[in-house]
Length: 102
Image 1 (cartoon, rainbow, N blue to C red):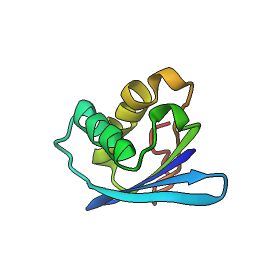
Image 2 (image 1 turned 180 degrees about the vertical axis):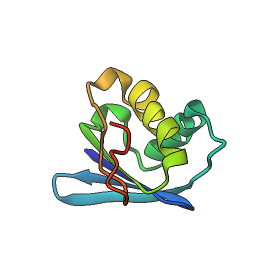
Image 3 (image 1 turned 90 degrees about the horizontal axis):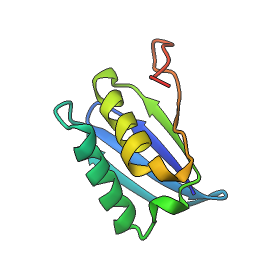
């Protein structure tokens, strides 16, 4: 499964794709005060809600429009959610053409 994440000002949209099929869509709040551990908890709970194990995630891509939120979410994905699964999240550039942290 590919985990697609779009970090916006108000919400973080998550989508899970298996082959070309969209399996789930979820939204969580964008919050600058959330730590990486808090984002990891929310991400793991969201995957569980849609009966998706972290082990089934074979790739992740992050689109970020909000610089303040990207760091802790990327850390949560990389170090806590996908750590033992040999998946390295890839980030797109933000609207200013800057790399989003990866």
